[in-house]
Length: 298
Ligand SMILES: Nc1nc2c(c(=O)[nH]1)N[C@H]1C(S)=C(S)[C@@H](COP(=O)(O)O)O[C@H]1N2
Ligand SMILES: [Mo]
Image (tube, rainbow, N blue to C red):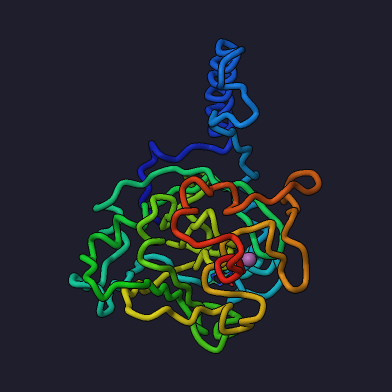
């Protein structure tokens, strides 16, 4: 088990009540500023995201090493040994290489809570209250040098612990530019709703990149490498016509086989419009070039 202090463990109901109180506070503020800019259509007032229920988040999954159907990963036997767990940080771009026990990483960095929209390239979405460590803090600890241009993430691939290991011909890998890993939105998640990640959601540690499609969110990470060249990532390698390296969310760039203009809300009702960079343009648009450049959006 992941050693989260009991004081941090909140029930889903407590979590919802807490948010209702925060929400009530916000609308009172908005009412006071009735004629002010807070209520303007383009206001910067924080948007209250309604998180998807934990049961839904934990039972509708993509984790092909545990099967190809959405229900396979949560129905699979709990065979992945997630404690002890170590993460190797290495590569020519890291001056401080090492193999770190996850328990030591927990001791080193504070766990933060971040509620974010989650958008899969298959045009469905959820809202997830993540717990995790900002990725840039872990990368900074590896002391990146001038050769660190990209970061490759490798996930566990063990046929003795995963019924469908090797489906991609090797471990699932993902990659980011060094500028992307330094963005404060990027998380190494360890929990959801203040509960440890489950096997099917990528226990014990997985990526969260709210402005990108879900396939970038590599699960059960065992290695982080600071490298010079753009890593050849799993889905890009599987089908480079449909999946690229950047995979930033966009309603203006359709997938070759379906529209990306709207998304099906899992655990909700109907569809909603997809937003550019999944609604996080203010935080990340500066990292990329023109919207016309398709390479950033598939
Ligand atoms: N190792 C590994 N990581 C993975 C995947 C996978 O199949 N294997 N699927 C990806 C895809 S396509 C998505 S949409 C998200 C799903 O995360 P969730 O099941 O927590 O919603 O995990 C990503 N990370
Ligand atoms: Mo996905």
